[in-house]
Length: 112
Length: 112
Image (tube, rainbow over all chains, first blue to last red; front, side, top):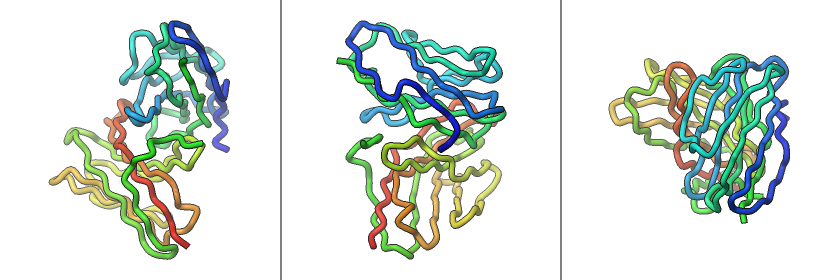
């Protein structure tokens, strides 16, 4: 157990809908990262927040957004969902921006 | 269930033998190179990283080698154990622990 929690574990929704994925980092970690893992694209870095501020954006679509709240939990919002958005979404955390990140168990999103 | 693609390159090794997993990277300007392990149904787990100004770094039972001339990275696992069975990903990133780019992954299968 990495100490990072993600909810929900599974999410099934329809095209065009909007969902919110939640991540609670390890206690004391200020950095939160979001990743997408799909069968065709592999692991992709989406976005990084540090202490409430956006630090870096990767391959994140404009339909996706994220934020980190004062209590340091983070949410990833996915809107106008498409079939191709079906994937595992992981968040990871670290004390400060770091390569040594601790990953959560992921949220499996299925768009029908 | 499976978290990653079913058609990854696979390396099969006998328990107790040494394993070598290879990775080609693309950006000669990357500052750090990282190896992650992902077991079935779990999030990735940080193994080891190496800075671009180094050629070799050792951890517990693992060694990472970096050849910048040919943009090649390898992970050596000594005395491979059944618990090492997983998918291994390499990643490259800049100096600030951001903008991670992952390789496609290699599945390591440890034979009894």
